[in-house]
Length: 257
Image (cartoon, rainbow, N blue to C red; front, side, top):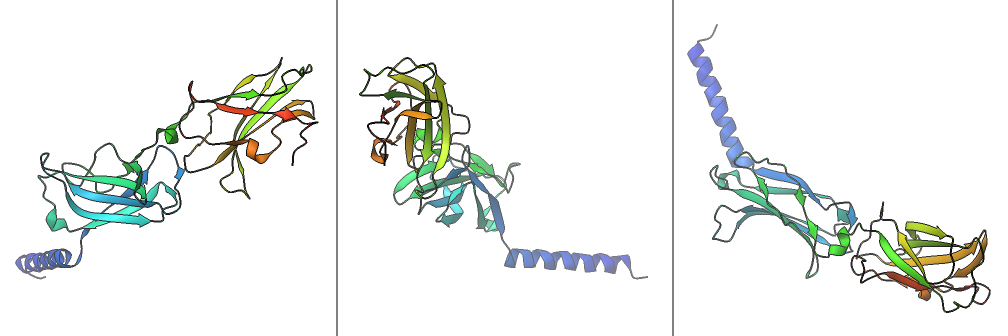
């Protein structure tokens, strides 16, 4: 049996060699995801930048220890990995992550809360939550609207019903139904409505069209006959000062394209 002293010496040598190799050939990495309040598609050419910062001094600029740049990011969340030199990290200092999403010079998303990492009990893996610079991206309110007609002298028959739906036409070859609603018991124009917000994901990066028709059973009485008449741009959250407004036209006079 070998000497305990020799065994301890051999173990110490192995530990020392391992530490030397580690300090000489390996570094650290902070990983995680950049997240928005929900999944969101990013416009073409979007760039996500995540930085590891030393924020120990409140009255001095933060010092960057590393960054990850994800070019042509297609959506959030997106994963990141920031490699850094562990020798630059001190236990008594504070470190945090920052993230931003840009398209060219336009800032789209940025974090507005602190995400500490590495020291003082903070993890090495952390997601970074960002907020939109345009409040419309977080809109979850019902979408109000009004349907008008220039032919108000026509009487709506008993059983007339309004059907309204919002379509994402960003990809013209594959339009996507966003939300819809209907209203019965109509007595004339204008007709107010609210599109429900459940499941609605409106983005300033997409294009939408409002479709509407007044029907009795399977017979269409009024509709939006032409594509250019039903285009709707939604720049911010609808409210009392912004409604989805469109006109419908008699189907017997405007049969559509």
